Amino acid sequence: MKKYISFIFTLIFLLWSKDLPAVTAQNIKLSNGFEVILIENHQSPVISCVVTVKTGASNEDFSNSGVSHMLEHLLFNGTRKRTQEELYRETDFYGIYNNAHTDMDYTNYIVLVEKSHIEKALDIQSDMLFNSIFPENKFEKEKGIILNEIARDMSEPSSFEDELFNLRFFDGTPYNLPVIGLPETIKNISREQVKEYYERYYIPNNMTALIMGDFDSKDMLMFTNKYFGKYPPQKPSKEQTYSLKIKGQRFEANSKVIHSSIDMGMPLSEIDKEDFYSMSIITAILDSELKERINRNLHEKNRADVFDINASIDFNKHFSLLKISASFPPNLGPQDVENAIIEELIKFSSEPIDEDRRKGIVLSVKVQEIFLSEKPHYYGMVKGKFIAVGGWNFAKNYVQNLENVSKTQLEKIAKKYLSNPSFMINLITPGDSSIEDIRKQIKGDYYQKSIKEE
Image (cartoon, rainbow, N blue to C red; front, side):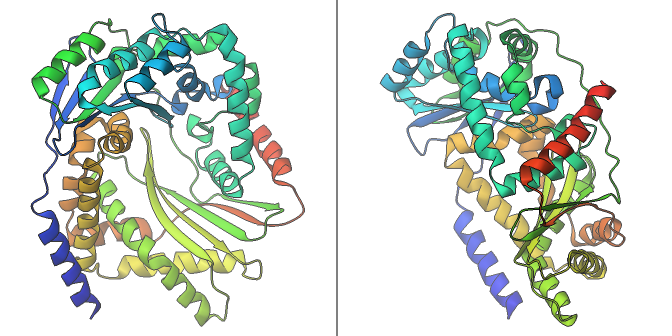
């Protein structure tokens, strides 16, 4: 019955999506190295331009943690041509949505506007990217805003779990630093440090613009040359390399939390390997099945249920990883949960992969791609990570590479990674220590070690 229902849904999706437009793109590099991806989409009279600057928290260390995020804020404070007030007045007058977002490997700058005002939007966006001046009278104010963001973020229990996991899993790399920054670093960072970072990474040959919407490509290429092509290229910074050494490590913290939680991380292959695409599908299947599998396993041993469990895959410029996270009641032993997860992964690795599940996962990704293409600025925001990590070819071919993975490959890769899994395990259980006390202790250990290694 399940297979029949799966087949019906697959058929409905295929019939529904077969006439929707596929995303076709032109990829052009300007003479100064600035990359432009043009995607015409004439469904609505709007155009978005998402410029991905290929730098983020992974280009930071303890001395300037949060500089990428702070710079994102500061770019809205005025340029050599426009004061902050003039910048805001123009964006309001022309109805320009103007926003930004910082992550580990990239920073996205987004404009969305009615198509007749796209030239003005590109003028403003390029001015912010290349001509920002960081007024001294705004600098301390932005520090205060960011420190409030950090305080808000640090008060969230889920943020604490992610923070501890990243500190330990990415130990010895910049990926164990928070994108938002450390409060002690933000308090002490200087305008000169921000300016030096800006001049090093905000160069045209370190940027890609994904422009999508209701335009003619010839006209849009002329606009991009006019507003982005006039800035000279600079010598790019040398790319760093990192390695992870976390297999089999286990960490535990006892804190004032209501429920217990476990986060398990396993390094996977680089994104240009076939393993990555196979594990992406396998992880999606696991995510849909794990809760039922784990609770059935625990019931057989007369144990309580987990509250929730999920599996996810993440990637960056240097690593990809499988992460399994679960929350469970204090009366359920952490070792019972860990054992159940390992047992079910081993069992999964020896089972045949359902072909309908494989097709369903790939189809759902294809449908998501179509939905994204209907919202130009969201499409650019999502693709920004792919572009920063693996270039436009990685972003463009991701869905096709998933589709190319066979059932046989999935079963082979499941055995490779899950038949004898080795995880870094991070456990948080109820105890007497405050989150802040644990945070101070662990941060001190990890960041002091990082300083000594520099």
